[in-house]
Length: 264
Image (cartoon, rainbow, N blue to C red; front, side, top):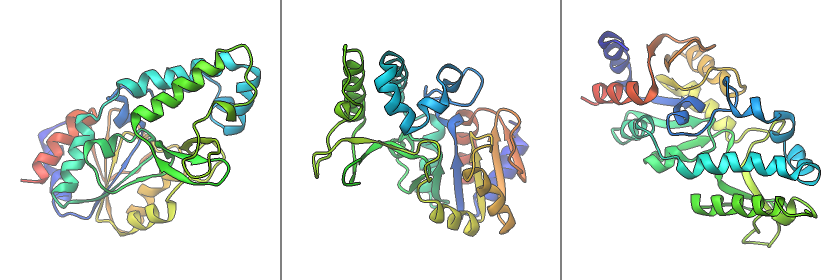
C-alpha cells in the first residue's frame, strides 16, 4: 500500500455511489477460516460431502464422527470471531453516505455486527434458519447458532443417530426441523437480481478479499465495469478480478486508511 494508491482510490470513493463486494479474505482476518485457500477447510473436509446438504445428511448417518469434527471446526471459528477493522471501515463508509450496499459471499454476519445496514448475502447466512418443512426463515443470534451446532455435535457423538433432522433446531412457526440458511453447492444464490442491479448502477465497486473464482459473484465486477463503474480491488496477492485500481495489502490495514481519506 502506497500513499499514492490510497489517494487515487479515495478520490474515486469520495464521489459516492460505491458498492462493496466482499469475500472470505475480509473475514479471515477475524478468525473465520477460508474454504478454498491453501490450508483451508476444503483441504481437510471433502466439499462434495460437507459442501452439499445431501452430503451432510448422508454423513450424519454413515460418518457421524467426521461430521461432528467438521461442525466443531465451524463452531470454534465462529465462537471467537468478531468484526475486524475492514468490516468497521465499510460501515463507516456507509454511514458517511458514500457506500450504498455491501454484497458479500460470506455467511458469518460480521458486516451487520460491524454496523452495516444494507448487506446482500449471496451465499446465505448462519444468522438465519430455514425450515425444511414450511420454508419459514428466521433470524437467530450467534449464541443460538452456536447452541444449535453444539447440540448437533453432541448428538453425532452418540451411538445412534436416527437422522440429521432429529439433531436440528425446530422452526418457531411449524415446529419442523430448521437448517442454517447457507447456500450449499448446487443451490441457487440469494438476492442475485438485486446484486446485479446494484453492480450495474454503481459509480464504483470496491472488491475486498475475493479471488474472483466463484460465480455468479465473480461476474459482478465485470458487470459494474461494463456499465461504466470504476473497479477498485484490495488484495494481498493475485486474483482474477479485472480492476481499474489496485491497492495491495491486508484489508484491515488498507480499508481504514482508504475510508478515512475518502471521508475527509
